[in-house]
Image (cartoon, rainbow, N blue to C red; front, side, top):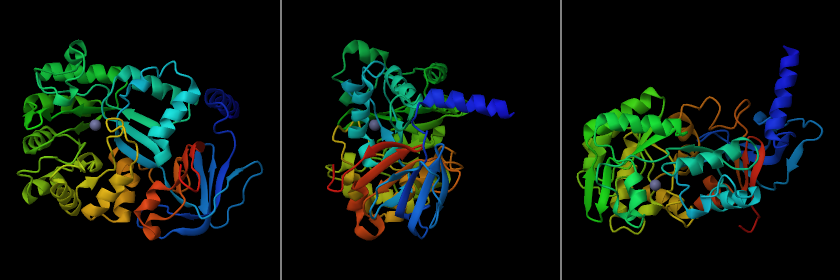
Length: 404
Ligand SMILES: [Zn+2]
């Protein structure tokens, strides 16, 4: 038994290099173990072997512990961004680009904002799984990545914003015409490394025209996904798309509906009853004439008990600043603890990994987002004052006091 653990430790150390070799501690920090809890003041978090070993006021530090300089730091469980895309041309070389370049791109896009876990809701699976492999092997410092691979679109109804793609690429995008074909695509995506399925239950084929996915096709994709243990995310767009998502058993609306016509309180109660989660992505809609109505739907959903999860559509949006998302969520009427729930415990529960993610307590993964100010007392701009992003005890990003 003992020999086996020695061999295992040696194998782990070989696989992960020195990333998690030393213990890591943050001292004299304000620590929020979970949303809504009173903070530990002047506390210490110790990470050992990639997991949180201790959280309290007095923690003896083993010799050799790396102590991060941190004056007035505020510690949270690692933040999630549950709606991103690795689709910009700069990711195409993910399997061959130098490590430093990939790490810089990941910092620019994601970890500068504190994200330790991201969900890619649609990209070329060859690219995204190559990136993920290099991160998971310990070669490249980056966040946990979950991916949908290629999304499923309604037949002959690609979104208008994909019109710029070459015809041969458009033809390759999955547009199942039958339930059988939908099942086959889900299986093929899974074989390529997908961990969720993304459906366009309402596809915007022109700025003022939405084509819903056929309900039997959506239902077949959902059933096959659930049999594989995959959650299903949907881009629903409008009432018809939301109805297809609800009827087919989708788990998550990847955006708030942007056309709110007919989205009334009884429909919102139905969303809650069916336990659909919503990723609002309000920054994406912030210039829309009806942003106030979209925000109101998000607040009503929250009050009706719909689980909200944080996400920004970063990657589709090539401006990576997420301060506007926090501002919009606050304008919608959500409080700081609601937003912290969206960033931590809600996504962990959605993916059923709340046993080891989403909270700062002993035994949990060593994923931390460390801010230089407290959004609960210093205002929501504090969410953008990221001092450290830490995954499994490995430092992914270090911010300066004066911003980036
Ligand atoms: Zn998106």
